[in-house]
Structure formats: C-alpha cells, structure tokens
Image 1 (tube, helix red, strand yellow):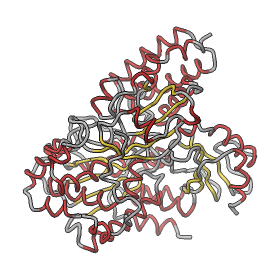
Image 2 (cartoon, chains in turn yellow, red; image 1 turned 120 degrees about the horizontal axis):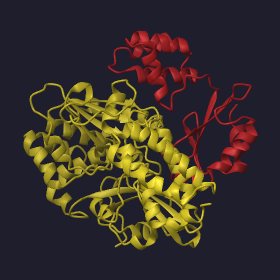
Image 3 (cartoon, each protein chain N blue to C red; image 1 turned 90 degrees about the vertical axis):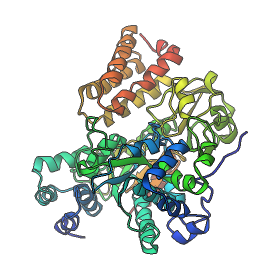
Image 4 (tube, rainbow over the protein chains, first blue to last red; image 1 turned 45 degrees about the vertical axis):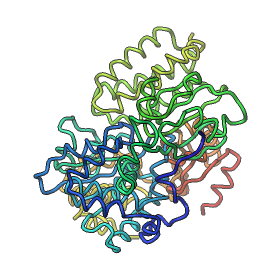
Amino acid sequence: MAQEYRVLLEHADKINPESVAEYVKVGGYKGLEKARSMNPKDLAEEVKKSGLRGRGGAGFNAGMKWSFVPQYPETKYVVCNFDEGEPGTYKDRIIAQKNAQALLEGMAICGHAIGSNNGYIYCRGEYPFVVEMLKNAIGNAKESGALGEFNIEVRMGAGAYVCGEETALIESIEGHRGEPRFKPPFPGVEGLWRMPTVVNNVETFACLPYILTNGAEWFAGIGAKGYPGTKVLTLTGDIENPTYFEVPTDYLLRDVIYELGGGVKGGKKLKAVQVGGTSGAFIPPQNLDTPIDFDSMGAIGAALGSGAVFVMDESRDIVDIINRIAKFFEHESCGQCTPCREGTHRCKEIMEKINTGRGSLKDIENLKVLARVMQKASLCGLGQAAPIPITSTLEHFEYEYLRKLV
Amino acid sequence: MSNYMDIIASCQDKAGGIIEAYHAIQKEYNYIPEEALREAAKAFKLSEAQAFGVATFYSYLSVKKRGKYIIRMCESAPCHVAGADEVLKAMEAYLGIKVGETTPDNKFTLELTECVGQCQATPVVTINSEPVFNVKPDMVPGILAGYK
C-alpha cells in the first residue's frame, strides 16, 4: 500500500477554488444541504459518529467539541484556525488554495450544528495572497446563495506562532495581544467576545462536507480506527520529493518517506524524522514502521501534530538543529507565564552552550529538570511542547549531545 | 498614498479591528508611524500603551521605519538545514547591512522570520510578502537587482 488517497484534494488544480459553480459540479455544497435537513443535535451526533478528530494537532473529537456549546445564547461563533505556524507545515494553505469552498461549506455545516451564522477565518499574516483568494471565494459563495444566512469574515494574523493556540487566536481576533487565556472556561462555553465559540482547524472543517455527503460510516471506515479519515502531510528537509500528500491515517511513516517521498535525498541514510512540526518529537529510524495516526504516534512518544514530516539525513547535526529549534521557542513564547518565558530562554541558553562545545553533563541534567517543569507548569501548549524536541533527542540521540560536551 | 486617518476610520466599525488597521497602514507605509499609532489608540478607545503593546506583540508589524522592500529570511528548521545561514550572509554582504537594518537609500530592510509556510522549496525568502524559492547564496545579487 503506497498510494495516496485523496478526499480533500481529489480535485486539486482541476477546479478554481474561488468558484462555487465548479465546486458544485464536483459534488460541492451537497453536504451542507444534507446538514440543513437534519436537526442540529443529530448533525453533531453524526459528526461525532464519524470519528473526525481535530486536524490542528490536539486530536479532539470534533462532534464532541461542538456538543459542549450551550443552546441558549443567541450569539455564537464558528472560528477557523488558519494560523498554521508550525515550521515545515503548509497543508492548510494547500487545502485552502486547492479547495477553498469545502472549507467554507464545512464552517457553515458547523454553524448549523451549533446555531451560529457568524464565521471567522483567522489566517496567518504570511499568507496575504490566500486572504485575498478567500475573500473572493466567500464573495462568490455569498452571491450564489450557497452559504445562505451564514457569514464569514477573514481576519489576518500578524506573525505570532502562539496565536495557533485557540484562546490566543480569539484574543487576536478581538484586537489584543495574542496571549492565551486560562482554561476553563473553554471557548465552547466562553470564547470570542465571551460568547460560545467553536474553533476548528482548516482541515477539520474541510472534512465535513465529505462526511455529510458520504455518511459517517464511510469516513469512520477510512484509515486508522481511532483517528479515521485522511491526513494531508507536508514533507520537508532531506527528502527527494519535498511536497504534500494526502494519505489514509493508517499509512506507515516508512512509506511516507520511502514511497511517496522517494527516499532520503541523494540516497543517504536516515538519521531522524520529526513529525508534527517544530514542537514534535524526533523519531529514530527503528520506529519508522508506525502508522501516522494520532494514537500510534503517541504510542512511540511522538505526535502527528500538524502533519509536517521533517526528514534529516545521516550527515545532520542534531544538536545544532535543536539549538535552532530552542531559539524558535524563545522567540515565539508570548512571555505571559513564567515557566515558558524563562524556560524557553534557559533552554536556548543551555543549547547554545552545548552546541558551541562549552556544555557539561550538569547542563544536560538541568535541561531535563527544566523540561519537566515546563511540561507541567506552562499555561498553554507552547510551553508544554517546547521541550519535546530536546527530551526526545536526549532519549534517542544522546550520543550527539555527549560528543559535544567539554 | 492613503492617509492613515482614512485607513483607521475604515476599520473603526470592525470589532477588534485595530490589527486590521495596522495591516492596512503597514501596507501603505511599510511600518506603523507613531502618529498613526496614537490615532489608532484614540479610534479604538485604547491607551497609547495598549495600542503600542498590540503593535509590538506581532513580529509581522513594525513600529520602526523600514525600507521600500522588506526582505525576510526564514530561519526555521527546514530552511536552516537547507542553508539559510549562508543565504543570510550573502544578503548582508550584498546589501552592506546587518539583520534588522535598512540600507542608507531606504530601499531594503533585512529581517529574520520564522516559518512562512512555503517549505516545499527551501530556503525561502519573502520580499514584501512575496515568497522567493530555493534561494542559493550566489542567486542573491540577481534576485535583489530585480527590485528597483
């Protein structure tokens, strides 16, 4: 089995993503029609039954997330998280650029389930050209009547990785600094402008039209049982085919690299692969025969995350790459909570020391303690995940550290 | 060039629209001038400190005057292993400035950025948000000569 399985990207480059007419020709907006013929409770139940789990990284059951939204408030919001900032990730951009109408349709389906006509897409500031395209796509969808009463506004992020965290994203839409809120209350109860809000990833929304059109059983039958459906992956680093693929979720990591990816660049040997973006664990070659789904990745101490697959060949200096990653987190920490603000700073400081040949065993011990504190005490996922590249490489590639010590 | 007063006024009715206003101002001026920041604070009923706090939180926004073309070199891990450091050195050498500086003729500002989401063709540089792909150090003069 080394085939792509395209659902979201089946018609990529064959239809104009801005055009409603072309999308309808390939079966578009049938899912929304079906959704609107159902009562909202049954709709959320159907999505829950499909097993669709969040594609942004947290892997929470989408229908379950919706079911937390209370019925009574008049104003509720559907927010699309299009802030993809995990280095090595561009799958949301691809999904939007190839199949924008499916994203809009998915948001409207969610709107029907929770009783909301207010949608926001929070798109990262690095994609101004995608923002323009989305605005045209929304204009066309409104004009054609495809979205009905459901409205969507696009807001642009401004270069802050932390805004991928849903409450930071909400703060940013409200025009504030993107600092995460304390949870609970979760956005489902108290989100945008303190009203109930569902925040889902681009890919999660884009799955919905296909789930409604083909049925929950169909979706639940694709890929891994616990995390069904397809996943769009982006391959980067030392790989022959640095591009994107859509695969069923039981696809093996080995096949991602050696079949679709064409193998390590220049026929070199693989040293490590980091899945899920810069906050993901480094996976050693002996763990390659693992399916990419959320739970299988978790079982080997890694994470599917955003679906970025960063390949490193035998010549790569792991400590140098971790040093670079530590600098990333120091830069992107929002500074609100102490474990993350100070922790990312000290991680960077120690990594630089080791990388320049001035580190000792004591520094490695300190890194381990620091990682534990950050994972337990940071307010949001940024600080909690920031030490993962360090701890996973200390576990699998300790010799790379040891050879750089004084 | 639109006046920043008009830009702010056009975003004023949007809830939380100050970031949208900043984007629009920056599109015209390449940065957010101090007077514009003060006006935005008034329009969105924030203190100047709060308005400044928002503007400086986001790395895509700048309160410092910048050149006509803003070059941002991605230094995230995929670009790092593809040779971003060498490209950056070539940029600094060609422009005669360091990261964070603007050329004396106000033409180019050189900045570092984290991932810009174009990792299919690393290393990546963006020039006024337009990505340039697979940049090698020896391509730098040719690329920058295209910006008049």
